Image (cartoon, rainbow, N blue to C red; front, side, top):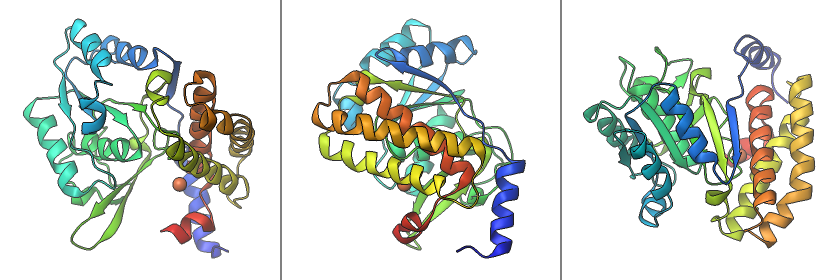
Length: 279
Ligand SMILES: [Fe+2]
């Protein structure tokens, strides 16, 4: 059980820095709708942050063609690896600054979204990437930040945090600030259905754990209880279907929404022992 001062501090953080939910799009054209929102919002020089697998397998072709058709100058940074390091973030930051990018568009799993958050923050900050480590360290609004999650579990598309691995200390460094919450997220079923069954299951169990830990948290709120309960019900109903038939777009969409709701719930209500042990 948490000590009282930590519990009070958590409560204050959730109350005075209430996380805002990003706008969401879902369905087969969701990534395109999100790109359209970005263009209408006035950004024309997006940095797409992704991994080489997605890029080389042509899974971003539609999106890039669409953006170029809307007169965008597109820069792609495909250096994302699992558990991204400070060197990965620095390389992405260089791509952003060299190309004068005016938005960051993350496409990928939690690693891509986490790295993109810090790239978007460092692009506008006077601080170094290392100095952004910690809680409430972001000193300027991020570059407009949009996300297309291709996995359903981490909840990074809605959370206020990013995790970057420090290869010098062999520790995972946390970046926590409400400014890391994206403007909008797209659950694109065309991209989500590419996730293999074992990863669908593992990510889905992560989302389920987020929802249960938020629901049973002593730092609960009425809206986190509501969203966590909804996430649990959606996962019980649709995760087995998404696992059995990855091409079931309706099930993929529902699992993605469950992950989103679970991510919102734990951002505000916090997590429990399962995640404490895993760290
Ligand atoms: Fe998790």
